[in-house]
Image 1 (cartoon, rainbow, N blue to C red):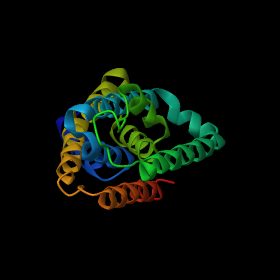
Image 2: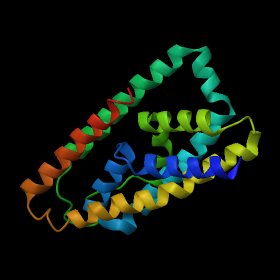
Image 3: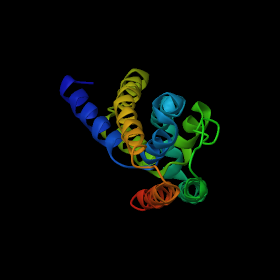
Image 4: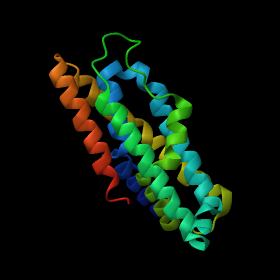
Length: 194
């Protein structure tokens, strides 16, 4: 991979990981409810799970979707159903009264979530298609590591933005409004991907 292409990949990874999507909205919600430290496993799960997904997609999963379009369609429906479930959980969650009330997503849960995240699929397929020149494992590792690195400043930004919202989330009505708004945004963020 040439230096110019690596720069373009880094910019793509930076911009695409910072834009609102299911991961970032859930990180912001968690940051608002339990703060940065308790959301760290969730953020790490996103970073490592997505990097692994890019690697697997680059190794041939995209060719399966080309050969069997029904598999891609089925994944879209499963993804949408799971996101609706998550949105429902977010919308119905109440105000976290203590550290045990809000359950942030675990590392494994966040890593697994990447496989049903429509924005994640779009980003993984796009990055492998645009930035892989058939350079094999080494090239795919560079793409994967670029996203791994880009996900940390992005996730940190969204968690801290959510944490800052704690100053505003002082009443049950505000918490309910925030949670329902985040649930609706989570659903809306998937529409362009589907």
